[in-house]
Amino acid sequence: RRRNTTALYRAPTANTEYNVTVVAFNKAGDGGTVTGAGRTRPEAPSISSLTATLPYQLNITLTAPTESASLTYQCNISSTENDVMTVNGTELEYTVEDLSPNVNYTVECTSSNGEDSCNSDMDTIINY
Image 1 (cartoon, rainbow, N blue to C red):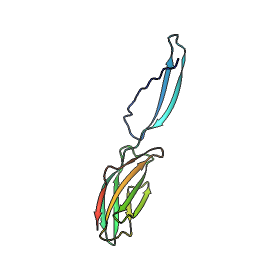
Image 2 (image 1 turned 180 degrees about the vertical axis):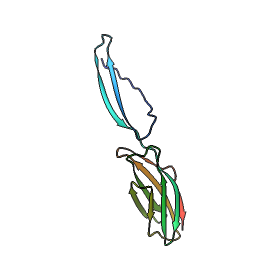
Image 3 (image 1 turned 135 degrees about the vertical axis):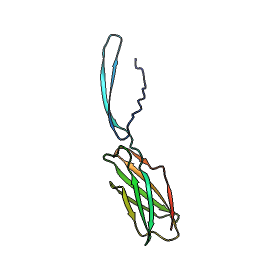
Image 4 (image 1 turned 45 degrees about the horizontal axis):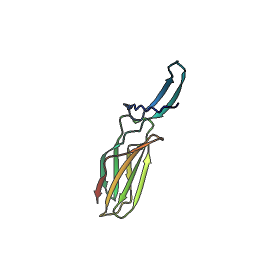
């Protein structure tokens, strides 16, 4: 007879690999173990500053999550004119060039550990 049992463990640290071992046995003491591993989801970066400079550039500065080892970042910059630009890498500062005057831009950034990603909570609008 098969019995389904679920246990939930809330991992305390983001972007950390955990190994889990499950031991199952019957009343007679017969059973076995199964071991698995998984990495917890990373925390989102925060956008610490957006600075508009001439000629129509946007400087983005991110603050890394607490557990930031091996993370990559991607920032999507979209406009009210339906333009979408992307910058990405492992750095915490990016410059976006060739923006249009009198247009609203929205910035959203993501952190990724290669297995999972997390979007920033902050969308920021800059109007040149």
